[in-house]
Length: 197
Image 1 (tube, helix red, strand yellow):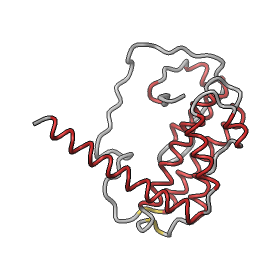
Image 2 (image 1 turned 180 degrees about the horizontal axis):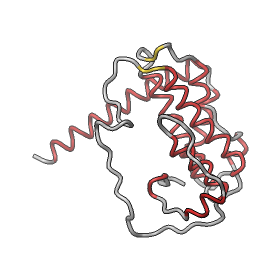
Image 3 (image 1 turned 60 degrees about the vertical axis):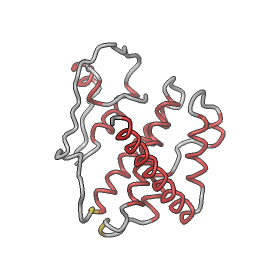
Image 4 (image 1 turned 90 degrees about the vertical axis):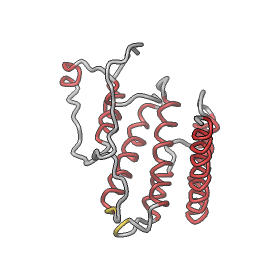
């Protein structure tokens, strides 16, 4: 599941039509929701070694916001919806061979979104609350189910434990985690600059 996106898959149009798969009317993230609807319908697929599509991220595109003075809460709620929808759809896919990859991917994106909300909470209007953070951190598996995963068990145990922490501690740790990431990115950038001299 890791590395599967809507834009790097070739589709049989008749399959999409027969299954009545549609994009939901969302401002951003409709590709993830489409993928969550697609996966339960697929019995098998083939990975091609060739690159069939070039995905370009432009700094001024809709998905790259840059610096903003305010972030509407409705945008945060939409991101929470996307991740919650994926967790809901995952419930029926727990027995699939890609389940460990899918739940890890879901939790990675949910964790990143929770970090984003905590980091930018002063810009969100009206303010985001515990409900959004709690839902983003919620793990769709029980501890026993996480323990049964054949891959990514440790990272999912960390995600699960983090989701069980009291709200204040969870957000404090998210803030600390973000600072560590920022220091890490800064150090990597500095090392890259030094190595190119």
